[in-house]
Each structure stands twice: as C-alpha cells, then as structure tokens.
Image: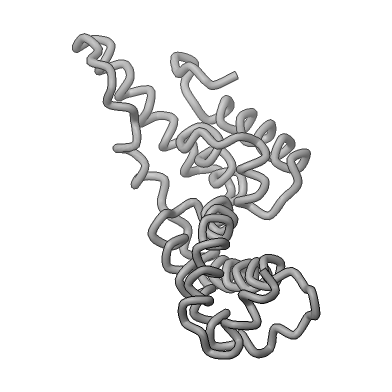
Length: 182
C-alpha cells in the first residue's frame, strides 16, 4: 500500500483510484454509523477523499497507515457536520410514517396502534432533547445501545441511564392504556 500511496503522491490518478477503492467502504461505514443518514454519509465520504486527494502530499509517514490518515479526515468532517447540525434535530413528528408496513392489522387493531403511536410520539416530544434523541434512536429507529451511544457521542452506560430516565418520564406522561417498551 505504501508504494501505491507514493504513486498517488506523484500524481498517478490510477493509483489514487486504487487507494480510494481500498478504503471507501471502511470510511463510509465509519461515517454512516455516526450520522445515520445514507445521503450525508455518501457526501461526507466524497468530501473525505476529495480532501485526501488535495492534501495527499501532506501524508508523509514513512510506512505510515494511510487508512488511519484518511479515517482521521473522515472523523474530523463528521465532528464538523455534527456541530453544525446538532441544533437542527429532526422533529419526532417526521417519524410518524416510520412504522413498519409489512403487516395489515384489522381496523380495530389499526386504530389502537395509531392512537398508541400518537400518544407515544406526543409524550416523546415532551422529553428533554437528549432523552428524545435516545428514545427516537432506540425505539423508532431500532438502534442498539452501542449504536445509540456512538450517534449521541456518549458511553453505553450513559445511554442506559438516559433511556431509563426517559422511559420513566414517558410512563408518567402517558395514559395507562398505552403499552410502553420494556
């Protein structure tokens, strides 16, 4: 890989293409796990490799790990993206249509599901922003504790605590007839 990077530094476009092919999936997965949006991840992956190409001559580690260098570029882009988008949280109401459409319940069950979902969404909207994000990621987007921790920049233990407090707050906010996740 070192020889390939050296060729790319010398201006060999084909060599950079091979380097790109080697690392693009790794960089995309890293970014996607953090932003949870395919289009944003694709854009940031492209930007990562554009910056790598523009700054390829600054990679001067003899025998260094090009993958670590390009991953650092990707992480910095993600941090900048998160900072600029942190305050622009998606409203929970946008997730109303996120319910699985693979089942066709009867009219009574559909009505109960709709009322339950709307009550839960109304309750979620009353939580503080961190709790709202945690519940949205954990139960509406069905992410694991680890994935949620990564997305919110917290430890898994912190997410468990936030989740516990959020569910407790939701139970207090919702009517008794709404079935809460365990």
